[in-house]
Image (cartoon, rainbow, N blue to C red):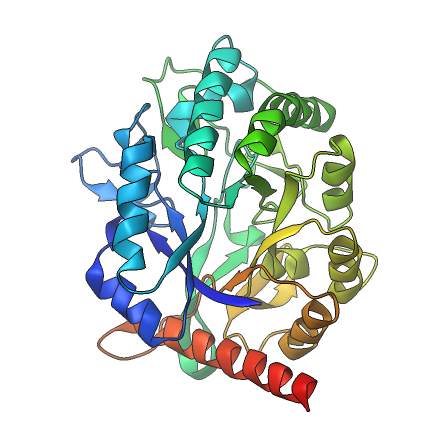
Length: 359
């Protein structure tokens, strides 16, 4: 098991690399897709200001020389880039919508994945979703009244339609005043299979794992659109769609725990590990399930995280674990403190497992 951290594009600089190294990280999962609001300020997909921001296609960040430059900068601090998360919405909206530019956009995605492989980056995480991550609230729900990310469907109009020209909460084209056409669960799965059948041969050739993130929030439908992996067993459906060794999971423990399910999360984890289908892991904890849950500190939620680590150890899992959506701690650097707390817990727990295994 390898300890990592997720960094957004604006964080890819020395201070954050140094922070990651100081926390014991050896690997990074990076987010390169940039989004812009109406003032042309760069924001991220998890920034509250980014809702309905603009996404632009063919960003030069995806070129091989740019990827190699980022990799070289991180290596100065002893950090290896293990994976990248998320395509820019403007680069694949018609892949998600089955629109007229779908095949053209897939060819560009193939080129991106080829460059990722040439740069020696192992994994590419993606979320096959029309509504994206939407509807979360910030509340003082974690221990000590720490601010955390929460979801309560009763506070939302979860059927709010998506305007034409938007996907994944991002604007890729001017609106015509209409709304996204209805689509069934069967159709969204057909679109996913079409994408995988086209992209996976290129991913295999490049040595890159395509890792699907489950839906968050894991509602069956959101904003009038169907979700793909809103129950844990649908990860198996994804695996069965295409037998490629590059068809893998970006396994988010929090998202799986939030889901309505027939078995405990540990059973599903073992099922997917036994098939060698877990690329990397979002190591986060939650209290509650849809339609109402709170994301909390790593050691206070419904998941026994040490039990998870023991399962990973039993299956000789050697991928990367990163904390995600950590609560903000009350201090001068809320994000840093929350991440440091989670990483400290993870490093200590992994170290204890390693020590007990060697005795």
